[in-house]
Image (tube, rainbow, N blue to C red):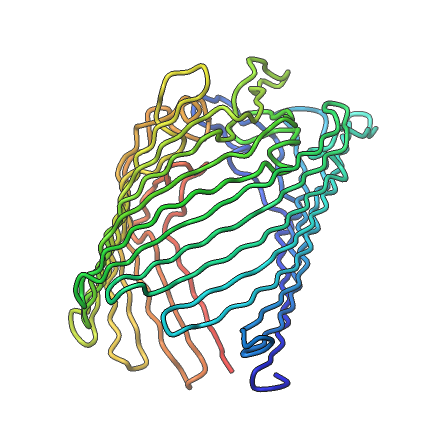
Length: 451
């Protein structure tokens, strides 16, 4: 920190999983008598991240300035072999992402505002080899992603929050984005350059009905441009599928609105929100009608779906006494989609009614105790894709509830020791949309030292 109003921040992160099995490929799924693969490992998954930030408060033009520069590399290498096949495939996939952002902001007597700019450049490298286990020969195959693909993104944005009357607060944000994706030609797809510019934004309102009760409302619109994964993936996909590229995709768009109430006192916090989302031109995976020699459904991503999702979220925090508090959360979503050429049906992987309840005892001493219940109702509203997905029960996902507890102890001011037990009754269950059962009885012990 060279001065009171200026500071530098540097950080670096490294994470590696040397060999991670893809469980849903290695065990038979619903409707399968044998697994899809004899081998399937992410080997390795690796992330390297380096970041620097420069901050100036009350700087040029009296504004607060932030500048960030960063580099991230992700390695997504894979080793796979279809069930009882005599050839093994080795993939090397990586992404180098470079980013630069700049923002200026100011607090005012009636609110705040911020403006900013972002630049990102992503370079994708991808290779795939096949080894014949009988002869030892190797050959080069078409890669999972077009090797040498690039994504360039630029954006300008602004957001204003302002108190416009005694009990009324408004917020407004807008973002103009340009996405340029370049895909080299491959053996199965031609070269492509997809350049799109679009606008997203939101408008929010908070009305202080009283000092304790507040009314909230928001509307917004957004878009997502197709990326290299959407446009150029060639290879096996979860659910016993095989994806082929489609370089003609357009952006998918969403409009949303939500309305809610909020209640605040010294001992209680309550929130209730209802929302609705509408997706147009949603990118979805559809079958081509063909099957690979290994029995996988051949699919392709297309702009062919329109989806509507509505739901409610509620949460409450109550301080029962000076040492005992409780928290409860409840969520419910309902979705419907219509894929071109098909009738309306339930949307993909919509979670059922779910929530949690937690009790916390904290007297301010060295010990802190938490206990909780997490639960979900059954979900039998399934899309056609859900029913065909070998990771999902075609009859639906049963409901479940698990309990857990955690004890924390502060020691010598700098140490925090904790012991936690989740799924205390060792219940077998699966979260809807997951490809494998959740862990059984789970014991976690941790120690944290701060200085």
